[in-house]
Amino acid sequence: MPRKTFLNGFPLPASDLNNYLMDQAVMTFASSAARTSAIPSPVEGMITYLEDTNTYASWNGSAWIDLGLPAIGKSIVTTEGDLILGTGASTVARLPIGATGRILSSNGTTASWELPPAASPAFTWTLLNSGGTALTGAATITVSGLSGYNNFFMRIVDGSSATASSTFGLRLNASTTNYDWVGLGLGAPASYSTGFLTSDPESATSLRLAAMSTNATSRVNGSVNISGASTSGVKIINSAVSASASGGNNQNAFVAGATWSNSAAVTSVSLISSAGNFDAGTIFVYGA
Amino acid sequence: MYYEKIVNVETGEETLREFSEKEVQAVEKEQAKLAKEAKAEADKAKARADVLKSLGLTEEQIQALIG
Image (cartoon, rainbow over all chains, first blue to last red; front, side):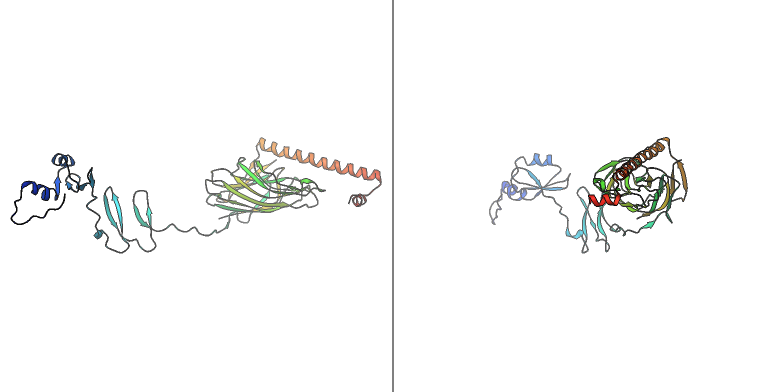
């Protein structure tokens, strides 16, 4: 509808009043139904207000378009850094700027300023079995009560079995399944053979660490790292353990990486002698 | 007798558990395997020594020959 300029002295018919004043003002209706009834043929540019929904709309030539009024006023924010926060459907509120160092955080329902999560502290290693555990009197030595640590370091010092050629192995939580081992195996046969150096993947009931020589006084030394121990994911194990000849031969050393696929947190580590009770040595278990 | 020694670092408690029959069998199987391997090695060494003796050569001499 074009704008009309009325001149003094001209007649003002009802049609002009309707077309140029009534229809160009904001027309108020109880509902959209009332609007349709009152304006069956709207004209492009008409603006209405509906009391039931408190909304303004404009006819664009084919439909009533919600004008989104009232708009959010600038006065809702009062301070530099303030944010406008939705507090419900079509409802907003001022979120004052957070205190220094706070970050905007969601709890899944609303947003607020919160302290950032504490940074993870650097590893602090603690010897868990004070003085170490003697490798004597048993074919399996288990250090338990290890919950709460995500990383373990084991140091095997001068371990030995009463039976020559015994293989040392490792188990977590006494489990005999889901160990997958890859690494470097070094043997020391009496004379050279191709078995001197091996590299075969292995799935076994424990992780091979080393094997004593053919002399029962052979000593096993080395270390094992376990990471991801307190998580529900795969545990990663790295080991480097060897044995002394001590007058014998055929001792084995292994430098290996392995996984233990088990969702349980590690609560115990067991050192195993495959062929008999340990008779010497100490195992130290550290946690971080 | 074979045992598992369990040291609980939280309580300080130390316990000794006797191996189950199945665990004992695993240890004895391993011992038998190692004994067999040791005997095979000993037999091999004896056979070598017998050959050297029949040839009238010492270990050092045969090493010198084969390099």
